[in-house]
Length: 163
Image 1 (tube, one colour):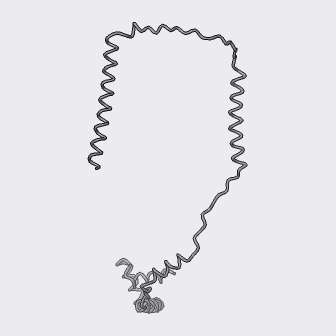
Image 2 (tube, helix red, strand yellow; image 1 turned 60 degrees about the vertical axis):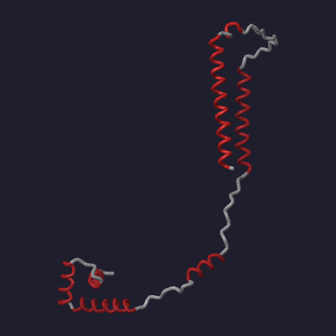
Image 3 (cartoon, one colour; image 1 turned 120 degrees about the vertical axis):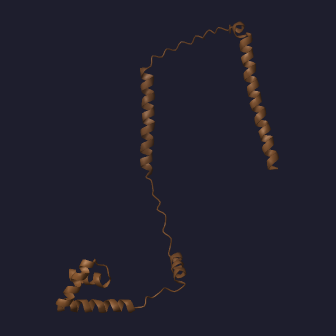
């Protein structure tokens, strides 16, 4: 559209500023070709206003949805993974692990001396059997027993509420 038609459509639709409105009115009064274009656009505007809009039928949505249901569903894309790629990746990791293992064996200085270790069987039971250690042991046992009894009582209470 050229600017004359745009100005006239804005004038007809009341979408122009008061200054633009005054400019269009003066041009309409002075210019016959401008007035002719205005009359044509005004006739088109009246025609558009007189046309009755068609409304879709009440079952339009239902008909469209039935047509959509009849369309075949798209097939889910299934990508095929090349088994050679997985084999190459697995072989790479197996070879890497083997290389590290061989490198570890090659750099170790292993000697195969099969002498039995000698254990000191003196556990120092006399050092550990004093009253403080015994009291701490009994206190820890008491706390554990109380926690266990508490959990049992909570389970019984929950079972009574549930039944």
